Length: 180
Image (cartoon, rainbow, N blue to C red; front, top):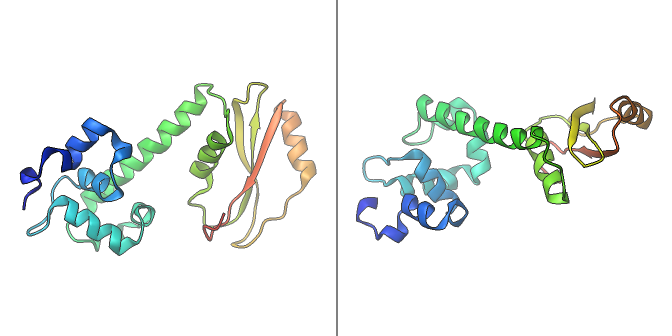
């Protein structure tokens, strides 16, 4: 059955327009991106199959060109579109902070740091230097390590905070394994 034959409340695009993007499943969001299915598969069926194959949406989004194109109905054009969408999302988040918006909650800081650290393949220790209103002055990866560790020198953190005249500092490090 074609998506056009579904009740309008069940169609991903119509559901997004009436209830907002947050109301959609990963498969429904991916189906909107895909736009069309393949012979015998609706866009939603194809999206569900891709999410099942990759495990989670993030794995699909992080796939390289070769791995991505192994999926049914996927090619270099869809890969390029997906990379463009991801970059627009990154730039949107970065622009919000560059406009002077503060990191006013732990959730804001977490979102900002996830954007910066999520896809690194080595461990880094970073600092977010803030002004008195908790606006970002700078984000810097001060120490880089191997896959399982990074050596940190506190005096360098303090030195850089003083150079930037930071009123506050958020320190963080990632785990390339994905374990927080």
